[in-house]
Image 1 (cartoon, rainbow, N blue to C red):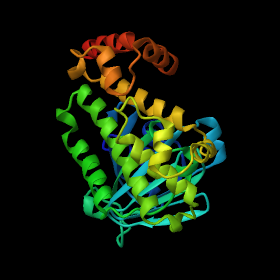
Image 2 (image 1 turned 180 degrees about the horizontal axis):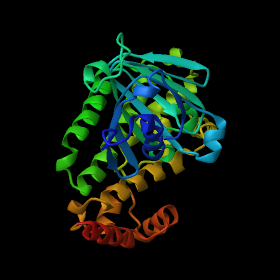
Image 3 (image 1 turned 135 degrees about the vertical axis):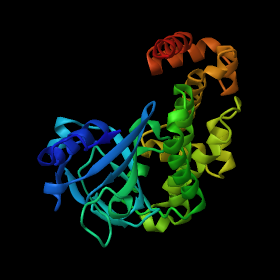
Length: 333
């Protein structure tokens, strides 16, 4: 928890934005309330992900190319508005958020963000007179969606009233509310759930109204194929040809679409299977399950092949990864 109670009033604004740089991302900030600024932040570590709740006086924050060169962050951030008004400008796209709205932006690209409590501009420590929201920090490589696809969604308003978005928003708030009672293993498991649900939110937005994102049919097809594959990752017999046939397109056409997004269909399926294995091996509840069984569960029937792929991807064999992770958890305990 970062609070400003013990910080001299004259130092609070600078102190706060240094804390934001360390926990969220570095920006150049301004405010009408520099002389009486108030803010607080609580953060939950979800492994590769980081979830923060921020209450503060009104501000404007700009992340420019200079900031990015000094401290690049290969990560997306999701902002969820809980109270007050806020907005984001990125990639020539501007959106304003009301309470319950979501937006996605890329911390590795310039942006302008702003927030204020609402009609009342005076700072106060009461939630009713401060803006209030959540920020989820997600590394680029944690999302299954290709970068060019995600880029089409930057700085778009996503209504939190939709069924999938409401589930996602509710999950984030419940994680923050129950963080004190969660173990490290709990948060590691939840990180995978959060990423999967965020992926569903983004895919849903693009599929339900693709015209609003100026998308071509090929990009929509990639999203549908990815959703199809996610549901069948445990099928060791699933092949790129099967996926193409299920969507009534040629394998060559499907490969060309994925190459345009920076992948091959076969490579993408393998990557997602490895990520599921990686997540399962991190779960202490799975310690009694042999690695070969976990690998087979997610489509790897050749144990030696799986071990080579895992080591190439994560820098350590699966058995060593599991052992090192448990050793670290026991030391923390």
